Image (cartoon, helix red, strand yellow):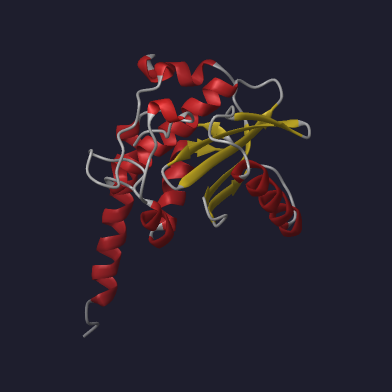
Length: 201
């Protein structure tokens, strides 16, 4: 799955599909320059994500992960504030934004916005690459992942996120390893469901 360009000169994503194969309603993702570097480049720094939000163009929260301790009221307030700020910004503006004592790094993929909050001294480009890798993982598992996949299979999306990030830091850089772990969990779940559905007599 690939990222949505910020400027019109590089094309726009349409429809609900996040990653596409060139069909109607789908747009191919431009290759990130950072993705050409070895996978080990992810672990070059001590990137720490404070929280990650995934929301739609309509301002509907689809996924959230908090790596700092906040009350539910504070989380709702921050979420509303950030969605208003990001959705009101022009597509031609930068994907980096100073917010309070943190920096926001966001990227639009089709109808969804991925937003991360990082410390002021953290690397914005590395965070963008982390977001891009998460999108690639979602696309690899779901196929041409779209917003509906996230809505109806949110537990799988959280599982992918937890396999990729732990405590706001990267724990696994290999797409194959993450997807393999998820497939193993799916197989275990199916086995348990078959066992539970068997008659007890």
